[in-house]
Image (cartoon, rainbow, N blue to C red; front, side, top):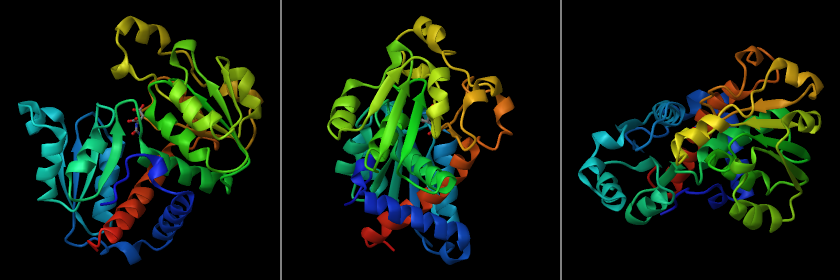
Length: 307
Ligand code: NCD
């Protein structure tokens, strides 16, 4: 059974195919409105979420399907001590596809091994978040008109930010990509991502603590929230949380066609004064995410022979 746990579970050809489907859905929504009739998506969210869960649910409804849902660990049998594997086996009896978010790295993998239906990882701890990356890829494609020849700045919590890890993995597979990794010393990209992805594939990257110096050369600036829930102590969080705050003044030297992204939720990282700047793309990411999730649900259900 095909599941999507990591963005590399999808080939570049498949990423391109998903983007094409998403664009077709945007142009011809009526073609898809009965595609998943009588099928059920189960959203199992054991960690807080607004966008990801609602976007999966909206995606399934727009495909004519139905949704059943667990929206917190406390409200499910996980609170009684049930294992992820047993939960996945159980839900396989009710639904056709699962989207799961869990605080533990590898939880979606465990679920996919036990489930008899496709599992989509909607975020596993500080590890991966492949469907946010699908939203990010469609945004890059629609805003820049290309997936190659880009200098991408990633800024903020690059250590615990799972969206960052998945995006580096995805963009490293397109040609002539350069990364500028902007973070405090304590929140640098984990060495496994640098070794296994960037160095292994010979992707050029620069690590810096200085956003303003890096800004003028960037085509994309991907801001992230400091991931409070993954810190071991509150003091470190408080010290690091406002390391980077993007303001209109800081954008003075930036390119006119810079694409400013953020997976959201935003805390303080981007001043609301930037929201009306045409370069602000973070709410477009939200919208693109729904279409990419529609495309992914369709693909996995077709491959499983469910539709
Ligand atoms: C991200 C996540 O959950 O990792 N949010 C999202 O899904 N859009 C980013 C974050 O929580 O900071």
